[in-house]
Length: 391
Ligand SMILES: *Cc1c(COP(=O)(O)O)cnc(C)c1O
Image 1: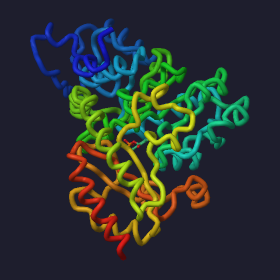
Image 2: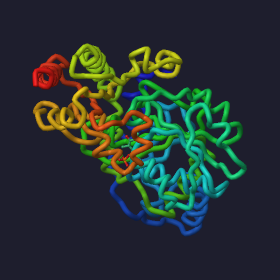
Image 3: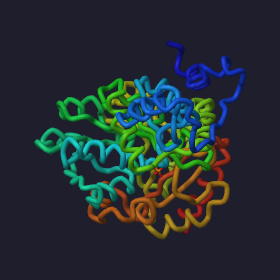
């Protein structure tokens, strides 16, 4: 198998030369002319079971060749048998929960995690009940109805790292789903550590330019079939134009992730030394990675970090209002640097006590470092923090 960086450039493109093209074609057909009714019936039968079609995709909610190419690319990067694309990260999570629900009505989930996922699980909307756990109590939380264990590492927004192998060992026969959005396939491949499924919000690093909403799950062909069935039935499909953009994003994914990581290392170090900052959460710091997972589970600490301001909410508000080069906005993994206030925005709906127990205070800010020159970013951020210290 070619090295990872080589695969980022070529994954899912193996058939292009045969087609006589250099860029993947975007297939916008919603329906596909039927050449023979027998073949069409066989194709539908296959797709009802979640398999790929023989020849004719029949209808684009069931299968789309442009989406399938992106999926093949992700599968190759995650070293998975298959991947399934969705309209958003939340549509991907919904499909995983609906598929799991057929095996049991409870899931175990490790907090903290993305506010949207926390909200979906807490809502019981899908007929799935959640048992919350921490990374050490997953085994104890599992019961006869548990059909899935869900963890996020690094976790949103605290950058807490979860030892995937330790969770998998506790889960026994129950499949483990890892939301690896923060790590990207560049820094972490959860299936290697025994996870059954890895989920990405493609909206973040994979798209990488803040202009596509998408989700994807890489897994075994057996689980992929369950997810394709749910996707066809519920319709949370990825649009082929979005799939094209995501597939293009893969070509620069490794470059972007490594460049942004360099910047994050520099900013994390400077923030750590600044008087206006109480604590910095960054997987590159030993204090944030007591189990030494960076190096073993993750190839690097990544480009997401969070920090708590000594001045609490007022200081956080000042920073959010003062930034110019840095964009005050939710989301992450874009080429440009974004800063946001989890307690007020992405994790606003998470129970205040739960937030507090994870240190998501009113002075807590999350930074998604982009690929700009990190010295320029520090000139702005450091300047604002100097102002806070003087005040
Ligand atoms: C953004 C995000 C999601 C949800 O993805 P959408 O594409 O916004 O639906 C899920 N998990 C994590 C870790 C995220 O950051």
